Image 1 (spheres, rainbow, N blue to C red):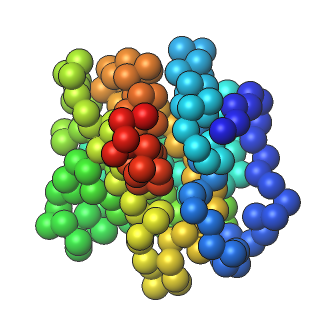
Image 2: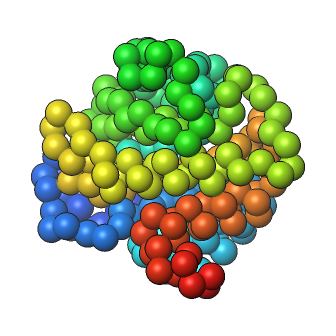
Length: 213
């Protein structure tokens, strides 16, 4: 349970993004924020969950990670917010996401599901698309649980997912995550943080969820 500010540079034991490490119970999660409110909210996650969770005050693109999270829409369009940043940084990634959504989900990726696709770069090699809204630019209601569903899907993808190259958990040791729905979706940073923490506990520390802690 660690909160850090400044650029997160990873750890020397991460090594190559393709080299399996001894099995670990959780990924390293770097929660990214370019504004103070989200950074403060993310700190509550790092301080309360069990696992290797850090806060980076700055762009998700500055983090040394094998995978980044895209808080997408269900159709895979990457034209606004952080998705547009990804699309500029990784020119092939939008088409990779849309092709995966079409191939595996008939063209619409339900909220609560993910696809993981190559970015075309050596690092981060992977992008995990986890929709927080069905339509591009959708404003989410105050009582939305979409950040929770998206985060849970990301964590399950890491825990259980497989690619042609091997298990996701062997290929991805560090995940960089921006705010989920906190941009055009209008989700309050504190709401997003609570839901991400709840998703982490459900996937990685289920005994805490069952016991209500």
